[in-house]
Length: 279
Length: 348
Ligand SMILES: Cc1cc2nc3c(=O)[nH]c(=O)nc-3n(C[C@H](O)[C@H](O)[C@H](O)COP(=O)(O)OP(=O)(O)OC[C@H]3O[C@@H](n4cnc5c(N)ncnc54)[C@H](O)[C@@H]3O)c2cc1C
Ligand code: SF4
Ligand code: SF4
Ligand code: FES
Image 1: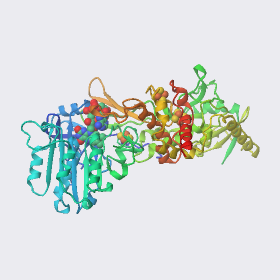
Image 2 (image 1 turned 180 degrees about the vertical axis):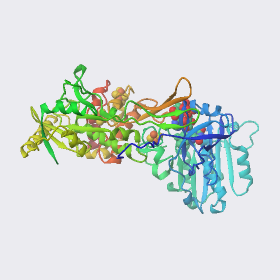
Image 3 (image 1 turned 135 degrees about the vertical axis):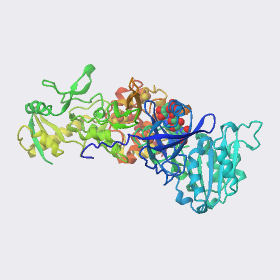
């Protein structure tokens, strides 16, 4: 026990300023923030922050940009879906927000070194994976093959389209996309994300999987990865739950006995495979 | 352990003395045949023989609503708010002390919840051996009849007019001796205290677990698909009363409001409950525990397994408050635990 209540509270956010804003799709916008005191977020890929708009509320968002030691800027890609995210979308560059974090577990990058990585992103799952992918691209020679699978509901909802085209054009990253519902202009793959898996041949003994998507995606994709021969301890998933405190206290984010906010959001599949509530 | 003898008549002057510096709360008879904790005033009749306080004591550490911070909308500076009134809780039964001890551990783990801890620091807990047992209680069969720590003083009524008071902390001893020295407890006093404890244990024979409580986590683990969940949860009204009255439930929601001028505002937390329908609903409407069964089971898993995995004792202290509070008559952890035991005993 502390002998005296300190003035420090883990619930107090630090002021940050919106320094950039760009639309990614009808519903998703990329926001760039910088802390007012110049500090660096120092997150690791897969971690999230709690973002406050005072008077509206606070919610968790994955950091989408890779970690950086140079500038304090960090990016969130946010889907407009409710009260806080609506308010966020209305903010103009120069507006202030509050930020707590970074919080939670992250993709174990060190393990991925010298190995192949299979990214599997369902819908907005690309947002947190982008942090890991861009980190790997920045240190490209430390990693083996990089394969990125992205499934989106329809072509209109695809995000980071230009960036992904650039990445794909590098020649050292394989990017495969699919949509559930094509439009007339779509010439790519059609179908759920599992239809992409047979198109990639990975060496299961040296592949790590990093997977983020909607709840229904995991069960199917994980079982296919297992069929490909990839062992559970090489499969990492990030899970989403309701979060109110980010500190393992409020109880909202529990998956069986684990708190997604501190034990997750990134889990090795072997750590959650026996948990009934996980996927 | 140091112990003193205190005469009943010495207590009110002590309370009056304590009240100069502390808010003093004591058990009193409340409406409807219930008991509750209330502020002590000159002349307040303390219910020394209360069986169960209707409301839990967690409200003194984790109030139903509590400010976490105030904020300034222009500068985006936020200030932590700590409320830590100096308070004495007098007459807390051991199972309730145990519940507070659990909250202490859980709120301190990882990133400590300093709001909780500030209140806890400012609070003096004076425990008291029960003299009666609520008909819904089963603390005696899960090892929650005694606590080894978490109190500053521990009172046992050893005769109609006398208490034996064990010292749990320096602060407790100071408060006890604040108005002058007291006689040390004799071997006879200690024996009388032991008998008082035995007497209340004898009284609590009727509501028992049918097995050693230490098996509970294993039972829960194997009982994920047990029939008891469906059977009970079918009747659940999702009212959350069992969460509200439970001394070991501590989930909360966080909200905020700006003032009328939109210049400043406050962020606060309020009790929440995993039995409420939308407790695990995320944006877009996906609910991770849609069914009453899932919510009901989760609550008991927390009590019977998840918390015990963390701290090594049951997350239910057997107070029986939820049993009373549930209008559907399904919130009885003892029945749930026993049903799982019967199930698995028959399966083996
Ligand atoms: C670890 C994590 C990372 C996330 N990363 C992103 C991201 O990068 N981009 C993105 O667009 N979204 C992300 N989300 C989802 C995002 O938090 C929700 O979209 C957001 O909370 C919606 O808030 P709202 O007020 O606009 O919606 P409302 O529907 O108005 O919110 C209702 C309430 O439920 C809570 N809530 C609702 N949905 C969620 C949810 N999914 N998670 C947690 N709390 C929720 C909110 O706190 C709020 O109190 C992430 C969620 C988690 C848990
Ligand atoms: S679950 Fe019921 S009996 Fe157990 S501590 Fe909570 S209110 Fe008391
Ligand atoms: S008090 Fe009873 S009816 Fe209400 S949520 Fe709890 S178990 Fe369900
Ligand atoms: S967000 Fe509160 S416990 Fe995880």
